[in-house]
Amino acid sequence: LATQLSLNRSTISKAMTVLLDDGVLTTAFGGGTRVASNSWSTMVHQTPVDWQHYIDAGEFVANQRTIQTINEIETQAKIRLSTGEIGPDLFPKALMQRAMRAATDNLTNLNYLAPQGYLPLRQVLAKRLASWGIETTAENVLITSGSLQSLQLVAVSLLAQAATVYTTPVSYLKSLRVLQSVQAQFKSLPTDGEGLQYWHIAPSTHQRLLYVIPTFDNPTGQVMSQQRRIDLMKYAQERQLPIIEDSAYQDLWLEQRPPQPLKALDQAGNVLYLGTISKSLAPGMRIGWIVGPQPIIKRLADVKMQTDYGASSLSQLVLTSVLNDPAYDQYLMHFRTQLKRRRDHALMVLTQELGTLASWTTPAGGFYIWLTLPDTVSVQRLFDSAAEQGILLNPGSVYGHGASHQIRLSYAYADEASFSFGIKQLAKLIQAQLSK
Ligand code: PMP
Image 1 (spheres, helix red, strand yellow):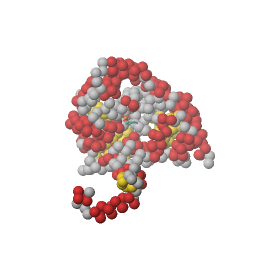
Image 2: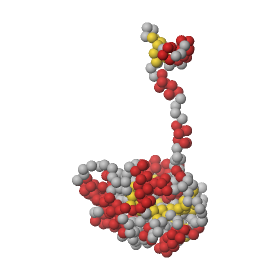
Image 3: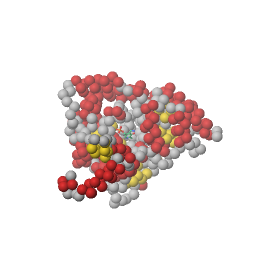
Image 4: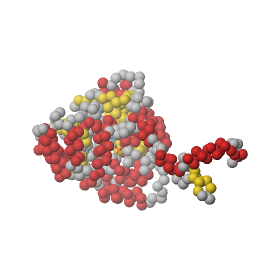
């Protein structure tokens, strides 16, 4: 060994002594010297990996604590007063089962699809968007794994570090951390009855864009007026301002169709329009779409291929069948009618139970009622004590700093009996706080 390693004998002998002392080597009577069993794994256990160091080094930071709690207990909660999902009793089971059969009857493979997604799906989406005044083609559509991924793709593909993202004071975007990889800086725009006041956007040489949910906002339910949409688009075109239009709730009007999307007014290609099937049908399909100018769509598709090689082929095939089935439009009509019934019921229950204790919005579509409580009520304590009773609600603070006395309620998930019961319990908890 000494000759092989070009070391002198005494160096090797000293090294053996050290290794024997450390227990890495053992000597057994008549068995010579050998590496102790488990010696390496013992050493690894003694100095565990400093995972915290790796966690701290990662791009994402932890979710807000309240959101983590909501995510953890949501599926077990007895009553979900705020969940932004379709209630199980409203799910169109027969329609979905038929679509699944139709999509899989002649199935020959479930391989990867084209970078922009399944062509027949992009075609049927382009056709459906035309009914909203959005003139587009399959070439301008990218299929994603939902709007959250669409936002992520936009962030990592198009945004400069520390780009300014304008939003409303409370916004779905503020409950997310998807833009943190580029350290986007949020700036709030004031709103009035017609929508956000875009004229407060400061002139800047630094990269900036606007994120807006013009139709049945999450969490406020607000709808931007037709005139504000026209004015905003004029402003955006004059100032080369890019807009991300999140249209998740657009199909879910309760009384009358809302004004046309910003994308329908977009002559210069300022708008990246985000659509999703999550709110109208099934969030678990994880399918969304982005409509925009072709070079942008091609770039986002390329980044998507680098990220996950495409959204689920199975979901894309099934959704194509759904959207080509005339029964989908009948289902949507039925779903709107049911949502309207639930909204009316929810408003009635709120009047009965919280009439003098709170104020709230009357949404014309989407899922949400935005409830405001007196300053003397701690919504955080309400959240904690309701959760102890198995009742889950989303505190307004999740959606922005100025909303610590608000709650986002949803009439989409809980059925009428559960909603009534949940609000009655909430009223008791509020009374208990006020009487202290
Ligand atoms: N945008 C808005 C406004 C939403 O409310 C939601 C879901 N809460 C999403 C996007 C996310 O949708 P997806 O399931 O398509 O990622």
